[in-house]
Image (cartoon, rainbow over all chains, first blue to last red; front, side, top):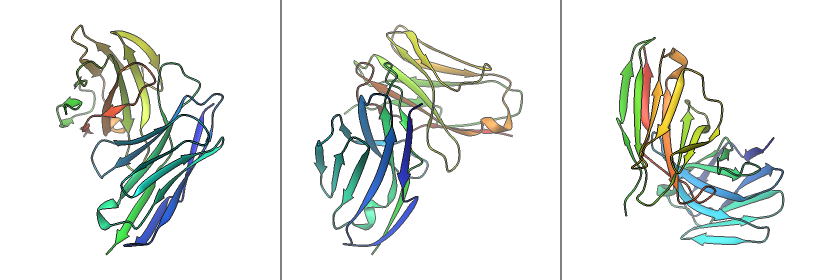
Length: 111
Length: 112
């Protein structure tokens, strides 16, 4: 059974304090790993897709990396507007594309 | 750019009533997914459709049914509502199964 575990559950940073969020996964065959940002009461907003170990993608202050067992979302010099819940999801053994989500990391960036 | 549209955005129903949630995918997206997100929880996959055919089924109660129509919009029908059905319901669409999924704003269902 495909599983995703994210850590930490919550993270509080000062503005400008860089850090990383972790996503560990267990799948029989990874077809894609996805990162989403979710603000309270809103739909998840797509950030990145990673397909193979060693792949990296960047967008503004965010950088996602992938190994065979985990993914990291690095946040460089975060701003208060980066505060949100970050969800990791995998498209694993199913060939229909359904996503299995982790519990998310809730990030709070204080000015 | 066009996004996924869901209606209604908020819905309040009483126990044992029925509810219908609608989803309009991004143009040219042929795959639709439904997810349920309880308070403080991650989204849980319910059901998906590819080219108007059901493609996968998750932990969806037998009281729920869904379909995708010829114009690719989808509807989630929920009957005999229970208090535990209160949640955010998201629809997502992708171009081909396994592609990047884009989520709608969700429908907040409250069952009283």
